[in-house]
Image (cartoon, rainbow, N blue to C red; front, top):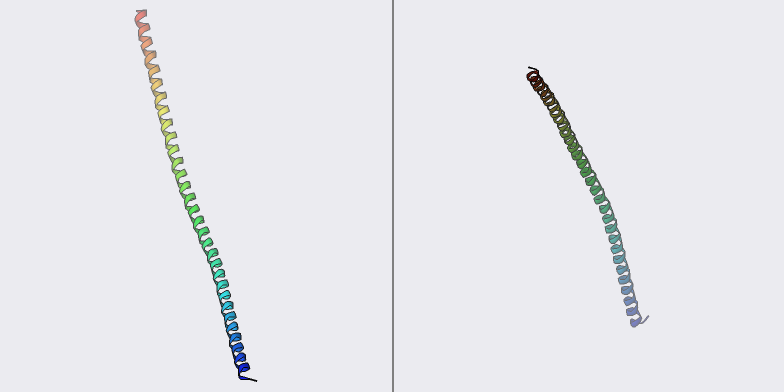
Length: 115
């Protein structure tokens, strides 16, 4: 084998090793990219779970606040009903008293007319 052939063989060997090295770097890059994508996907799932849990907790708080507000409104309604009932009783009693006063006044007038 001539010196030129030996040099060509060495150049081919170096080129093959370089190609193999580039292929390994590409494989590692692909593996790293896939791992990053899987981590991002899992991170997205985890974030989605946390968002779902936060939304659920917020919904529970809103539900509880709505329930508490409903109770307060119901209690206020009961107070309004009771106040209305009491006012109605007072009006009824006042009407009764006015009726008696009119009746008494009518009797007095009748008695004066009869005298």
